[in-house]
Amino acid sequence: MANIKKTINTRLIHGPVDGDKHTGAVNVPIYQTSTYSQISPGKHKGYEYSRTGNPTREALEKLIADLESGYAGFGFASGLAAITAVLSLFKSCDKIIISNNVYGGTFRVLNTVFKNFGIGHELVDTSKPEEVEAAITDGVKAIYIETPTNPLLNITDIKAISEIAKAHNLYTIVDNTFYTPYLQRPIEYGADIVIHSATKYLGGHSDLIAGLVVVNNKEIASKIAFIQNSMGGVLQPFDSFLLIRGIKTLGVRMDRHVSNAEILAEALRNNSEVKKIYYPGFKEHPGHDINFKQAKNGGAIISFELTENHNVDRFFEGLKHFILAESLGGVESLVCHPASMTHAAIPREIRDSVGITDSLIRLSVGIEDVKELQDDLEQAIAASRRYGR
Image 1 (tube, rainbow, N blue to C red):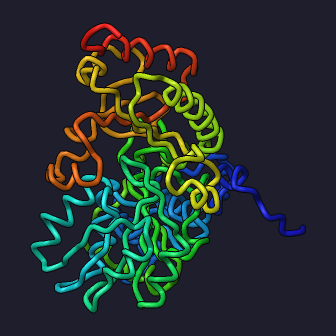
Image 2: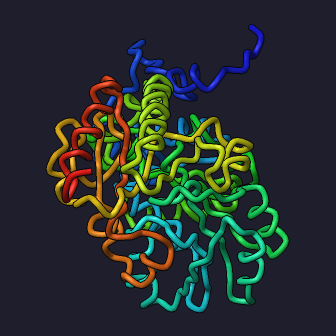
Image 3: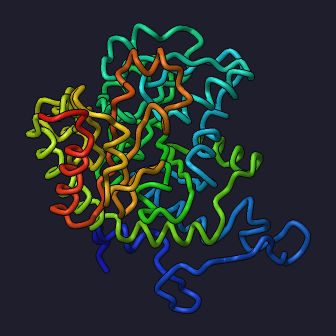
């Protein structure tokens, strides 16, 4: 039979491990076991202990590697566990360049934990390759980017940064949480390592915590595998099963997420009570053209600020369908206040310098009826006015 190349929509459902060949089950089973019987001392059937390897987690790891066009994938207990494993590649006196408005947890673990081990970092506007180039010194070992960034949705040219990194023998690390491999595949543009908080769109239902890492070659894969097994922050079999299930519907969910977000972003842009809006789908958004060279569309996260005539707390109180909560990427619409929630760990002076103001609002647009979501935003904006228009 001819080898037919599968599209991503088919690969989401029929990945490298498709069902169970032993029983004919159409879903990968949950191998809820901690250990495995051995044929003789040191001789086993491919698995010896579930921290080291588990068939359910392995099916997920092969799936995400396939979707990201990578060499190998790794499952972790959370997005931050995945980030921590990748940062553990580095040693004392190494330095990492990071995007200047990354997720607050990424900044926190670098600034408070890895700092203790002598691993440094520098915040750089990675949307400007010339600034990245200028920041490279002898100690720099990697460039860590988010594109789009969280929460200001800045766009970085993955190919340009990867070329700079390769010229200096550095790793290019990309957090692809906001877009997933359905919208963007950084390894195809030269990235070495891709990270996901799989808690978000990949899981898609706000019912699990998970992290994934994909690497582009055998050497890095060997290092991450050693770190994963040695540090032990692995994803459990049941969560691996849930994540495989969530990924099966990623395509249809993302299409609806994005469709809703495009409508809401346009409505907010045309609302005179919105002072500023950040959405990569708009032509006027900085980096729009680069984004559409490396990604399918502008995604489903919108950040915006209301005019000074509004009380942000009243806006949050007035919402009926958008849930005020941490996280993003679930089927339900979520709203968050980055300055006091996701990015509270970042010092105010840094937040203010990059634009994460106290008036900034971030929406994770869900898949509900878009008219009801639009009405919800409009009535909450009206309820937040300090005085009449």
